[in-house]
Amino acid sequence: MSSVAEPSSSAASGSPSKERVEVMSKAVNLMGQGKRNLICGDVPMAVTQFEESCQILAKCYGEMAFECAAAYFSYGHALLELARLDSKVIESLEAEAAAAEAEEDDDDDDDDDEEEGDDGENEKSEKDSEKDDGASSKAASKEDEGTGDEDRTDNSESLSSQDEAVENQEKPEEKDPEEDEHDAGNDVTNLQLAWESLELAKIIYLKRKDKESQLKAAQAYLKLGEVGLETGLYDLAAEDIKECLKIQKEHLNPEEREIAETYYQLGLVHVFASNHDSAVENFKAAISVIEAKIDKLNKSKEHLKDSTETTDVETVYNARTEIKELEEIVPDITQKITDTIEEKKTVADLKAFAKKEAAEKMVTMFVILV
Image: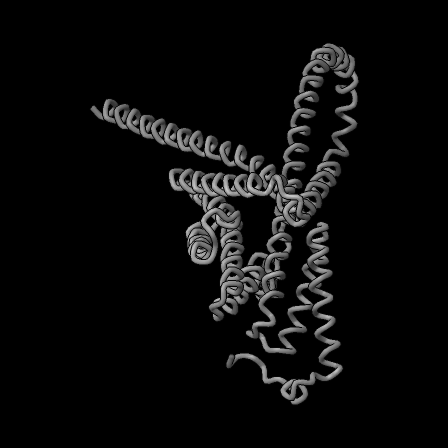
């Protein structure tokens, strides 16, 4: 491979240096730790470990070396999961802010009701006090004439200073445009990094034509589709997932679970893109694959049920476990089909209502003009 870094002399002779072996061992350990942390839910730590592993392998073998592909894929996968976590946190904060705002609005309404009740009670006392103050104000008016000009001067100065303070508070702090541009340039999102890393993994795997490498390229395509789904690039996401499906159909049996998962992901993309018919079609395809897998497992289980061989007993046990898992998945996908059909009907009803409303407005305008 032309882009792979030239191996060291010790590596070329078949005896890698001790330092190189230690570096490679560190990269492998980081990959293992990252996978464990990803499974356990410590996604940020997994991202850090996969990133370091990528750097070590790229430095050792070259950026486009086959040895880097697995690390690139794991790094991209972890970044995708981290982006999803961040999205959930943002949604949670927005929901809390909306709830707090609604609560404040309710409190304001209660305060307004209390103030209206107090106004009725205070109105009478204010009228009484006005009568008492009437006589004293007349007596004091002559005395105040001498100091009136001074008070007006003081009041005008006070108002002027208040206006200046308000103006200073309301005036936004001006930012240097160059500084904003610099910040924007450095703001590379986790999804962007995930896409770049998964794209590298895909390109590297596609260069090899063996079944294992091709199927790993398919998984990279699938994850790229998920990134596209998260970023709202539905057309691109659909293309990537279709490429994944194409490779899987070439190398896997038609009833394999991986194919069912790909059909389901493609259905999700079509739901978000409002392609409801295509979504239902792919969800049904996913169910068909799962049902075929269940049928195959049942036949295998039936064939081996009377065997006492340890391996056969394990095969039967595993088949029963997988059948149970698959049977639990089917109702969820069926519900997704129902939801998609209902969503399609709702969208159609809204469009019909909007069209009818627009037509009625046109008729009203025509009548007015006539």
